[in-house]
Image 1 (cartoon, rainbow, N blue to C red):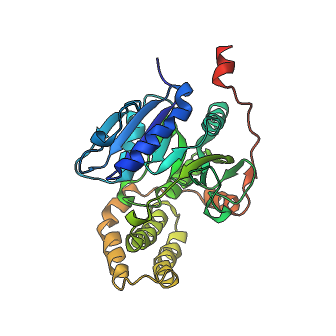
Image 2 (image 1 turned 180 degrees about the vertical axis):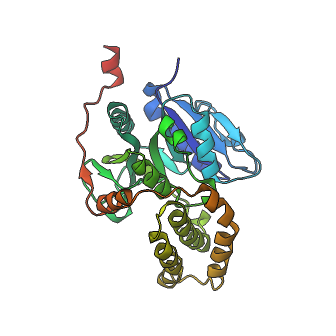
Image 3 (image 1 turned 30 degrees about the vertical axis):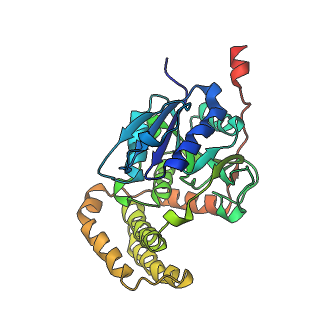
Length: 308
């Protein structure tokens, strides 16, 4: 029987986090999800760190460590269910109700291609509003989601080409959400549907984050911005590197050279894959960032209700 939900987790060299994430899936056991794990070249392989007693996931391993974006694309391709919940390995499911609410939105409205969750501490306390997909306090149509945890409509994701794998790290969600909006779909954010996010600060490289943020903002513009807008958005986003470097007090004197080389190296691929979105889409995106649209929630049919 085809499952109604696939859970896909990306991981690399964080066995304790993966183990805890998998344990948290017990909260949604009644949904009978398919569980997939993409091991991004962990050493030793991630399968060896999974405790006994946990529902065994199907493991997809790539020893080349192509990155989590490649992993997310593969998880969606391999998924058997029409709805795919993508999780980072440092997340925890807080409640079944959060996932059921997201599934109800996706199943009840064909316009919705993605559902965003709010970030919470391990005990369920919400993160600050500024660190959420949107500052709204009620369900709303928003510009984009945060990739730590998100629910996707599989067929739409694949039809749109998934995430751009040349982004490698960071920013792929924004690019995808612009494209889904251009295709006539929307992203819905559920502020009361929390998923815990417990990042390991020691595993975060601030210089790498800065470089990829700036580079991928430029890639987003090069792929998606129509002419002549792209002529000024790319230089403007390139210049943001210097502002962010100064504001974050990061010593990276040659990062701007790296970004320039990366963009030059990608120029042929960009030229062949560039599909600018419409000006109307960009205007809608801008409006959604400033003023999300309230979204009426459908009634949630629980597992018990279905059985009745």
